Image (cartoon, rainbow, N blue to C red):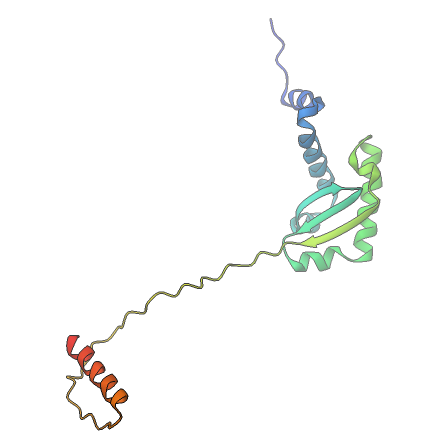
Length: 151
């Protein structure tokens, strides 16, 4: 009879394979976030390590301001030390500096303007004098009269 493996053992077996190394890192990042207080967890969008730098991306610039304090950075460094004692041979062992960023999503403006439809009915019957002696103005005025008659 086959022994049924628990979910934890299956995940640990998968993590040990080279192909699933990013999965292992994501699980470690998640575990590290659990060490932080709930307020800071809600501010953080992404966390990753690149070139021995712990990069923290926040949802908003307010989160950036809150996490970029010296006290908070020192607190994160202490949490890294605690985490490396608990989990050996992780990417957190080599972390030298901490960088904090904020996401910058800007909405794209639609530059195509739709033609505005008039919400009124033209009440003029195009009965007006055309007093212009300048031919260009006279012609434009007559074109306006023709457009009003077409409505």
